[in-house]
Length: 292
Image (cartoon, rainbow, N blue to C red; front, top):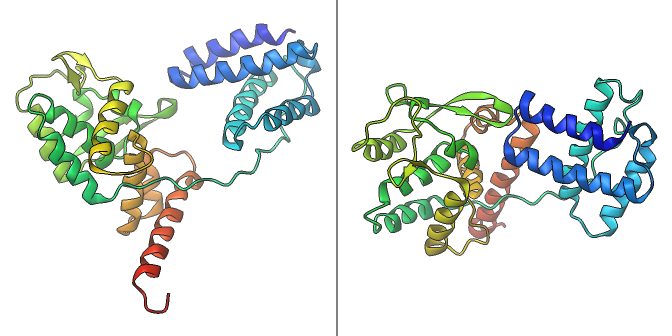
């Protein structure tokens, strides 16, 4: 059977059944189209003819082109998902990706925003009389609740429980988690909600009175204010999520609790933040300890 025919079925599967996010579907599609183009160039358009060796040759071409190992791992994950689907539906008798391991990479430690910079960000936002309440809530939920941008944009008023100080998050793979909201975050939320009358299914965060915020808007706001108050190399909303996780661990939070708050599927994903905390400790030691 032709790979292109199964590709169409697979995209429908992850969109309609597994309900992957639009960004994930787009990434998977681009990765698989790139792989299918390689198959066509090498006269290998039937899925039953794709071997482990052939997939490794594709990865070798990607490596020689200078593609980063983390990007190669993502492309391999897309291909794995596709062949797992094909094997499950008996389009192939053997999954050629079963024994292909991810390329080893030196994972860069995420950059962390010092807590004082967060406070300085609020001071700058307060100068914007028109949008201050909205912008402060955006920063506060990204940092205070360690949310992903997509999770923040999708929040409805009914997801917030002020009395129990919790928020319901619909995360990756449509997995729901309930996480706490800190007292300071509640104060900023109440200030934002003070002049609004919302129903449970209404978007929580809106601009122009009724329009739901969107990812590019969030990136623009965060980049603008972090640029004003810091010289950080990375100024994306995800830096605030990284910072929240690191600060929690710095202050003694249990790693598994941080994993649940972040919505990570595997503990190994969360463990990157322990390395950040250790590196910060080493830096402090070198600066302050007489025996360093």
